[in-house]
Image (cartoon, rainbow, N blue to C red; front, side, top):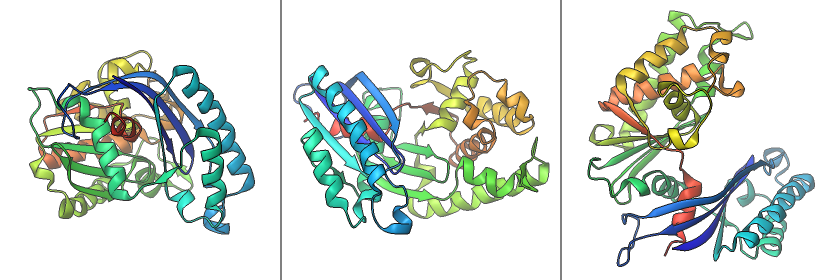
Length: 322
């Protein structure tokens, strides 16, 4: 058992995971089974990417916000006694003219140099984070297809012990809502049949593009990540409040996803907002997110999806397990 700290620095958020990780003695590599026990999991909005597209530089206030949270995380890491720390950053820091200011600040505070990873590395970390704990389960066939339904895009990663193929397509719950469900500056309440049909066609075209790289039909077990999937899982379980422990690794059937999607796409804003597990920021986009999930299941022939609360942050932690 090794105590590690993983930090994921995105364009908008800075996340920390301190965990005890282990793999069985004599086992190694990404395909080895193992155990990860959370000790601390945090997320803070720092907006490191503020104005980078416009100025080409990391804004001083963005750097200071990031460093302030790094100091908080450093204290947590020290208090919990993590043996190793890994800090992974995205492209917001890679192309900035003053990226050395960022590197120097992180190194001075946390004692590690932030690593800017490639898209392939991101896929690998996400895949391992989502599937590592599933590798030892005899009831789950391989390969796994990890589907990460975000706001603007959806990532598809296929693999068994490691990534075999990966593709990101521009279809997500926010993008689909804004593209198809907005009329006259207002979100349709509820969507019209024509809007839903247009959204389905758009999603189908995106799945065609994903299938050019990732053989979707070869998926034996579907693993779903991110808020659209976990919210559908929470609704399917009839939870009265969001419960990560009850959602993580819960299984939702195709019939349940189809019924929930139909319910969400035919309900009003007020009716969706009244569902206790739907976050206020997700009320207007959860219908589109559920439709993406349903479309993926129908395209791949999956009769069920396993919801995972673990992602790239957990993959970073696993990379330190040795």
